[in-house]
Amino acid sequence: MIKLEIRLADLLCSLGFGREGTVSHGIPQALARATGLSRQTVAALIRGEVRRVDLESLERICSWLQSKTGATPEDLVKSLLRVGPPDLWVAIARRHTAIIGIGQYRYRDSADRERSWIAPGDAEAQTSVVHFLSTRGNADDFSPAIETRYVPFRLAAEKSGCEQEFQEDVRKARAIYEPVRKRQSPAAWILIGSQRTTYLVELMVADLFSCQAFQSDPQERVPFYLTYREDEHNPVRSCFGGRCEPLGPRGRGTRHVWLKDRGGKWTLRRFKQNPEPTPGLWYKGPDGGWVLVPYRENESDAGMVLVQRVLNGDLAATALFGFSGRATAAVGRLLERRPQCFWPPYARAGSGLQVGAYVCRFEMTRVDEKIEEAEVIPIDPGVLQRSGG
Image 1: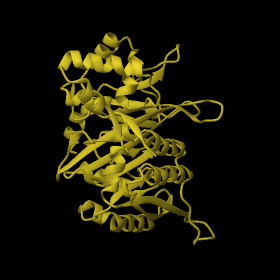
Image 2 (image 1 turned 30 degrees about the vertical axis):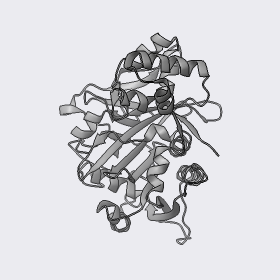
Image 3 (image 1 turned 60 degrees about the vertical axis):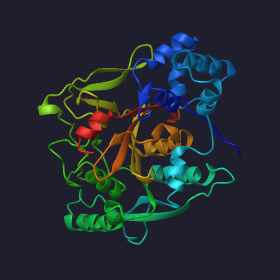
């Protein structure tokens, strides 16, 4: 099966209208104004989210680019359309093997101590990832072999005061993660689930941002943070999560929150402190202040995709998770449908790595809790670099 992709963002960057996969500010508006297309359409084309587009729209875009750069129509069309699997798939396939790391829990007080489970949202995301890896190549491509590493833990061991059991689970996770930490694994690792269900994710984040795993970080070096719900089943200690809210610079940074206005449009507003912590996913904006995507049942949810690339261009590891299990499943579907949103990484990190961190903001219907809309928000590259990545 021939697969076509519109690569407008890459084309604009190659012509000097952006860098490292990020289109310069003002270019989408200028392109919309010059071509007569709506800003929403141009923005969706740049994000690679449009699956159906008419030839006249592509002709207008190429004509504008030709007038600005002098590039030939043939070169523009060849660069705009790509035949082949997504770059993220290629980066994984070049490693020949993809290892999925996923948490497997059991209840510490259960009479059946041998039975274990995978969180439903994590399992749904795993299905999406396996489908993506198995089907996105062309006939001439070799799909990577897929292996699974189950990371055992006892649910709420820390919450129940069983520190010894919790530390045993952490040691098991560290042993599995060690080849990834030392960059010794030849495989591409795909970690599914938040730090509350897959301890490998906590280890990856702590390693990337030079934090102590399973400990709160007063310096807030990780540029994203989960504020747990009050009834969280496994409120594990974490360098990027807890029951409290992040403080921000010197404890008084400017904070904003995504809210829906009267017209139904989501906008950023100044965050107002509530008596109780507001559950949701926080991320640092370009100015270093925190921005909240609130968790509101049947209304909004959030997730994250974190990717690491080694110098040769291959994927080293990626983590995908949601604030809720439903959001984790939605992130998996989003990666399967729109992998171009999460590749390539765009910020330099230590030890010869490039990283990308993408916030996924979801809007859900009130009727059946399905994910209705999704917006992918890359965390500012300067923020990532300042955070220690």
